[in-house]
Structures are given as C-alpha cells and as structure tokens.
Length: 328
Image (cartoon, rainbow, N blue to C red; front, side, top):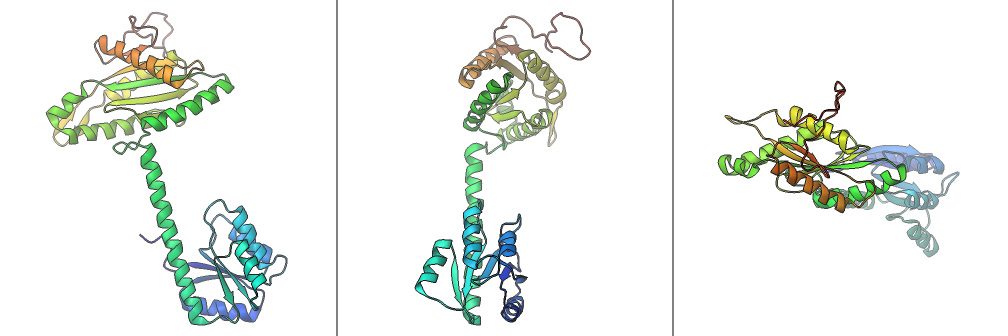
C-alpha cells in the first residue's frame, strides 16, 4: 500500500516571483500539490510543522534565512524523517555544494532548472520516500511483535517485566503500592482437547479483550503463558486487588463464550502479591505461589500471598462487616 498520496505535496521556497510561477505551474502539471513560500523563516516553520510536505525545493537565496540554513536547521531539529530536501541555486561551486552536503541536502538543483532532469529527480525522491516509509512500517511491526503476544496482542512476558521494573521504580518514588495479579484459566487444556485449539484461541482472544476493557487504562496487562495472564495494578494494595479480582470473576469470567454452536464457560484461579518496593521477579514468584494455593483450594478462587489457608476478604462499597467472604 503506497504511503505517499497520489498527488504528493511539494513546498517550493523561492523568493523570485517569476521563477516560482514557472516552477509551480510545471509541478502542478505533473500532479503535484504545490505550496509556494517566499521567505526562509516561513519555509523553515512549514517544514517543521506537524504535517510537513513530502518534498521540498528550497532556493539558496531567501530573505530572513538562507536556503541551506533552512535545511540545516530542519535536519538538526527533526526527530522523525524529514521531507526530501532539494536545494536550488543559480550558481554552483565546490564550496556551495560542500555547504549543502553538510546541511543535509538530499539533492542539488542548478537554475534554470531542466524540466526532464527535475521530473526524474522528483520521481526518484518519491521512490526513496516510499521505500523509507515502508521500512519504517516494517520496523514498527518487528518492534511490536518483539514485545507483544501474537495471538492476543497483549504484552509478552519480557515486555511485561520491563514495564514492571520501570513501574516499581516509579511507585517507590511516589511511595505508592504496586500489586501483581496472576490469572490462570482453569483446566484450559481440556478445552483445547475437547473443542480444538482453534476454539481455545478464540476464547483466549476474547478473554484478553474482556480483561482489557475491565481494567483501568493505566493498568499493565500481558500474557505470560499458554493460559496465564499477568496484571500490574499501580496504586493498589492486596485487599483492593482482591476486590478487583472478585469483580473480575463475576463480570468477566461468568459471561459465557458463544463459539459456533457451542456455549462455553471458563473459570480462573487468581494469585495476588504486593511489591512493597521489591523486585518484580520476587513479587511474581509470590503471586505464583498464591496462584498455586488457589489451585489447591479447588480452583476458581482468589488467594493473596501470605494467606494460603484463608479465603480472601473481599471489600466492596456496600460491605461493612469484617467477616471474610469466601470466593465463589
């Protein structure tokens, strides 16, 4: 899919009205969208705007700011890929060409411009820009797949841990808690065996979407195993995380999955552990132990690390009793 539009935009920075009219008419006849600017500072501002043109032809002699200065400053300040920058001059000497090269010029045009020469250079610039954008898209895809689970689109384990280390540093500075919630879908291998891995994949994707919608926008969510999901809850203590987990079981997990003619229900065991400024690796091991206790307790329940034998006390807005509430 082409990145550049059918009519690429060209900025023509030329203070000579006659030259600007001739060139803009020529460019428009080749189906370019032309924007003419006669001032160097204005050209620089346009090139560094949020949506700059794809191509730029900048005359060497411009008021307020020389053409090579416009290009040099654009190259210096641009954090992303800048437009294709062509410097145009009525005279060419070695010093001027070297200055243009150091400024970051992509191409050098000699006035008066030869029509066919200009057309070939512009078409070449389009191809280079197109290839660059294709490469950028491919690199973004590679980076995404390196940090995200291919099935669910959630963060993978490695990316999750990187974020959790960063979040641990942040909550330590803010003196706020960070709690991990490890969710394991109960007996999910039985679903794959009985209904097929395709059905299992559909459930995993749908569960991921439900979970993402249920969580807060700043919570950290990833898939860290075949049927395991890890959630980082900034600002949450274990008791608050247990409340969220209980609501998750009633609002997310109890909703059945309609796949073809099958109506399937899935439960989950949940282990919870709070950071208290410690390494996420340690806290994750504690969440894994809490999850193991939930499995030993019969699955489909919640356990916090350090409370393996007791049912979780779920605190809700309408609950004033101090008595523990057994998970469903």
